[in-house]
Image (cartoon, rainbow, N blue to C red; front, side, top):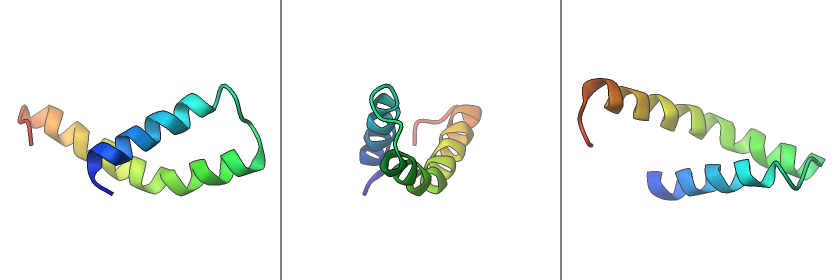
Length: 53
């Protein structure tokens, strides 16, 4: 999955928090967290450097 698709998945998961608080939702969120953290760090580096990679 490319970065753009991952960000869409993070957004969709975040939007689901208003409608689902069950175990399946929690498991899905936990699976997304490692890649979200990596992508967020990468985005923070890009912003800090002022580049548009």
